[in-house]
Image 1 (cartoon, helix red, strand yellow):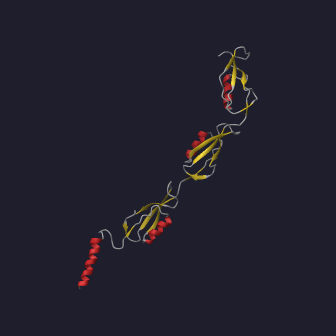
Image 2 (cartoon, one colour):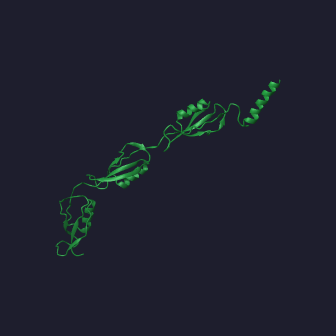
Image 3 (cartoon, rainbow, N blue to C red):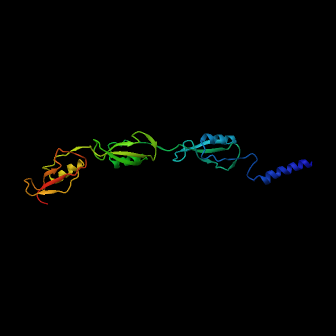
Length: 228
């Protein structure tokens, strides 16, 4: 009788004093599984008699694919055995495809990259048969699939390595300047020839001469009929 009374008292002590009021005998404390792979998290929960339930899958710039991003109930919660713990899983970094950039201006190419979630990287120039200022290549190249936010390097055309100087003699100054600018030739200080037989404002001479092979960006000196 005395032994039975002692056992009962011990049970009541554990049930009502040592154990918290809201914890039933046999309840399980939910472990922290955030940062584990989904497979490891499932094994850990199953070992404790809990159920692993897949929740949302979302992109993450930091967590590798198949890593647990969040859990519910949270770590430390006390629950009955068999409780389902919902796991949100990382889908990895969001991906983007390098868009077609060749033939675009640098500004337009940068806009295409931004629209795709990519960033402009280093921009270099090199001689090319493509018009000056147009993109001729990118790295990574068109069609490659990369993480969003990747920096894309561009190679921009500097124009042909050697150009033929056009003939602007006989043009008025405005049309001569427009033609030279279109081909990437800036003009230097103007010279004037009051004795020229051309109408005033007409180009009577140019340096370098028409037909010369010159580098892109060569400065052209024009002599204009008339006075300043």
